Length: 54
Image (cartoon, rainbow, N blue to C red; front, side):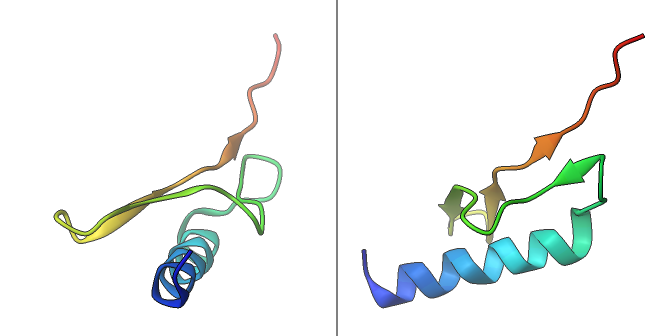
């Protein structure tokens, strides 16, 4: 994996944590999978979503 790709993946993971992470509801791991989409100017970041059982 190239250094540039690693830096981009880390950037998007951290951005996702800052913008979307909500403890106990939406959580993003430090090693979450990142799917770079440069043509759209962003990326998909893997997250855990908690669903309550009723």
